[in-house]
Length: 266
Length: 297
Image (cartoon, rainbow over the protein chains, first blue to last red):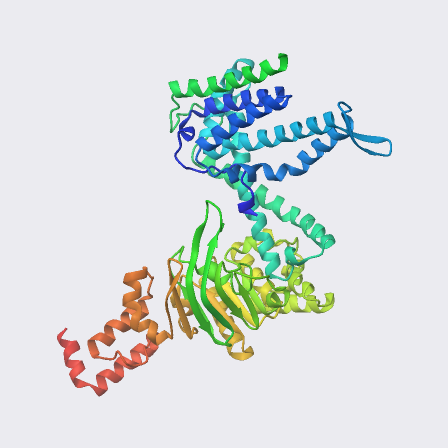
């Protein structure tokens, strides 16, 4: 289970992308999201894909890890593809089944929509793959800092976020351990029929929730015993410094958005 | 042979960037009905080794044979339910092993899975609880509200309730008070001697298991560095302490010093204060020379 879940794990290969300021990466990702939303034609998709591929290669992380990151969402992609195929009625008729017909326009926009989804998920994996959770939080705090003017504490938000992220692998591990304990006593999930499997997973919810609460309480105690007070001024262990490289990084995304946007009007 | 490992290797997260090796080329044989103990520093692969005994972990290289089950890296895995019935495994942390909302349900979980009726399972639960020294008043309680030591005992009882042929325990005496520790070691030894069970214990406190164990295994960095009888362990303890950072109990160190001084290396080691005292008395009576040397030193 653990090795299938790639979300929220950083992979250190020491590439230059790893060294980019997390605030720049976050900004870049938001711009990328904008670009992907704008993409509506094959040439634009091609450019976005080439751009993504270039950055993925630059991280020096094997490409299959990005593919793996997108894998859990395949059902959603198939769904998006199917919806487009069914609803869009443009272009030539390709295939007819009773009153419904598949058109070239539907097929094309379905493929584009599914690829956009795949690109988005696998590309944003760059963020989590190249940034340790700590840095990511610091970056997030930096990006959200202006919110203080409207009375929202960025520190509070990022603390919540970091704990949530930190707990995903922990809770999975915990679940895995309980599964192991159940397997050791004759209830192996792998060897059960589907109906039993469902029951078993439901019965897992109680112990896992209980242990999550227990862990949360322990965490609160251990943070408080080390003098953590929310909202109190804190110094940072790593200071973020914005360099020319970070500006260039963000600019490359601005260019991508501009190029993709231009395809909309040409 | 109850358990045979042939060049078994195991790596966590095999085929990924996080791969790390936990066992390397471990070969070992354990006879049916032995009381074996696995020692070694933390991270030496003891727990990983133990989890191979009932197929919770599958080797990534080599072959494991437990009773008449064969587990190997290649090929399809046979159904393991029967293996799990015959090999009971108590995990290192009891709070990770209990998952039901009452102690009774938790104790019955195993027996019910192996096709026992509810009445019989309850009977077994109560018996197993008595074995570890807890009474029936614990049955309706929530396992997560018990103390660490009680939780540990319930976890052990939940495995005993399945009446397995092989019992493997991962540091069962941790978090127990000294008296319970001694009782548990005694219980395991009784199960081994009277019911012919094979018992394998991972332990950090070698002295607790010393009187009962007949086969010692010492692990280091995922490899087996020693397997042998207590007498052999005593003889090689110096090397194991140096090379593997093994916490050799004081009684072994003391015996080795006595043995080196009086030339008793080839004798059966005396590892309890009483036995050593008797041996020293015999030494004083039988060897006046030894007496003189001792007086001189």
